[in-house]
Length: 153
Image (tube, rainbow, N blue to C red; front, side, top):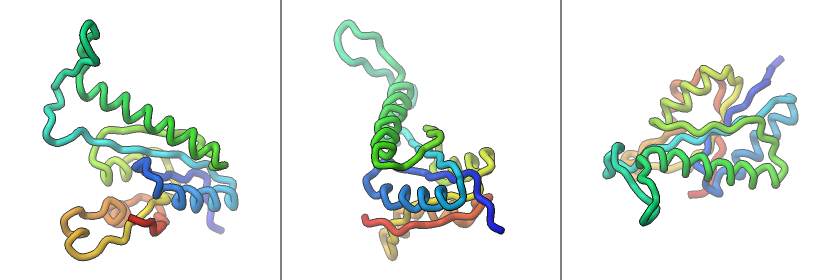
C-alpha cells in the first residue's frame, strides 16, 4: 500500500501554483499527509552580493542579500496566507537561497518527503533549450516520487 506522510510543493509564488497546490491538497487529504511549501530564490546576476542598499536618508545601510532574503520571506508569507485562506492546509514553509533544482532535491532528501508536487509549463523547442526546466532536473534526480502538474505560462 502506498504511504504518504509528507508532501513538498516547491513554489515560485506565481498564480500558476494554484492548480499545483490543489493537487497536493487532494493527495494530502486522501493519505492524511502534510503539505510543506519551499520557495527557492537567487539574487540577480548583475548585482554584487556584497552590495549595500539604503531605504533613504538617515536609514542604516543593509546588505543587499539580507534585504533580498527578507523580501523573499515576506512574499512567501503573503503567498502562504493567501493559499491558506483558499483552504489549502500548509504545515510549514521554507525560503532558501540557491539553485532551484539542487535546493529542491536537497530539501526533499533532508526532509524525508514522500512526494514532490511541482508545476511544469510544458515548454518545448527553443524556449525549453534556453530556459531549461527546473521540474525536469528535479524529476531526474529526486529522492522520492514527483507529481507534475501542467500549468499555463
